[in-house]
Image (cartoon, rainbow over all chains, first blue to last red):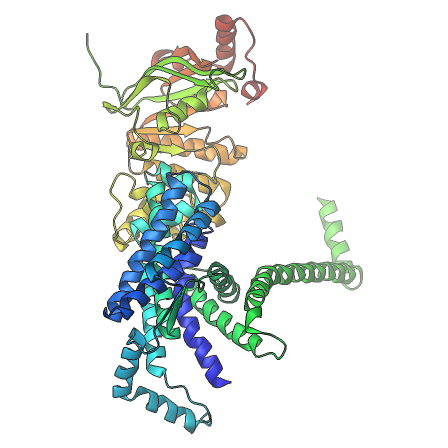
Length: 346
Length: 270
């Protein structure tokens, strides 16, 4: 059980980078960008091919980031200069990327099992520091010693990477260009009247969004030990689920808070899916329907809760008014009458 | 001939909508207009007279079929809207249109502050800028200077329009375009914005073109007045004669020129 949750936490923190990308397009730009399903695989495919070809895995992961950026920019170009509807430009790019990803990989699946990836490198590094032994002895001390994960170093590394990306995203969204990107999603007419090129800003925003998605894809490929042309199916929904769950649970007061919420949402989503799949009658194939259900619940539950809260509040207020009337009719009745007669004297 | 440098110059602007269809409409009919630096021109006219089209042509939302536009001596006829916006401050009728609701007051001001500069990867709201924003916000007398990090969506319509006005003006653009910017507000808020407009335009000596449905406002504000009808400027009142204008006088003048009553109840009543 602990190992399962540990594993989903580790996956969640990597998928959080993808969710941050979806947050950029979906929330900041107000652009439901389906490119994600394709660009996630592009990142995985490119890094897998490069790593299998002997390129330094860290370099390969960074190159995946640029490939995602290019894919996002293409969607942006289709939408702004091609004047194609936003959903459709994403879908077109997604479908085109499927073939491009196959071309990149040369076949539909590349295994990375006996290859050195970023993760094996960090694993070796953390072994030399003794991080795993340290944490596991801690766990044994508090009585959780029966099934121990051996990837603490990787987890810590991923937490650092994700939070650095979160921090950079926050910083970017506070810059002059970042403010203009946010305004492009918020009030296009206004930011255009303030001399901002909304076309370029949309393209930039989508590029950055898909860069993060592809980066996440590259890391997932290395963590899972393979890249597969179908691994991106439904990725946009997973991203949305993370964003919506995070926002519902942790709030969106400021940008820093919202990005933190997205990371939290991604981790919680992974844990929920892992737990759901441990239920007897559910298959791994049911994952997509579970995802859809989670999104539906996350979208509808807050509204239902708000509605019932509002109802209770109104009922309470009516009760208070009634009891006030009651009170004035009983004891305070005299003083009311006195005030009234006073005012009549005037 | 003495030539005074013009801040805004429209030459023979012509614009037809739906050309070649039964719905064809001449929106702007060979209009010429020149604004000298510091001119504050109010524009009145009934619905469909072409006032808003004229604004959209100046701001670059629409491109004229014929004619050219010069701002501060530069020909901007083919220049895209966002590039032209470096020189033009705009306030729209809808108080929601001029600000970004889910961003804070200081972030909105920072975006307006970068209007005539190149946007960079530097921080949008610095401490120095925040002090400056606080200072310009004080001029609105609305207490917004104490709510810099409040989201603009939380402000009232009047407050948002006052902020829009400030954002359009505090970088001192070459031209200020006000498109019925008080029409969507209740009377007391409209008066507040009218007074702020007078104050701010006077303070920065902005060359201003203001469209309004409110004849009294058109008479009270500015140093020149033009009346439009069917895409043409049918009456121009200069600074000398504007002082003595009355609503009745304007309506009579319209009747004399066009031979009919002015066809907008809204314009007459307000």
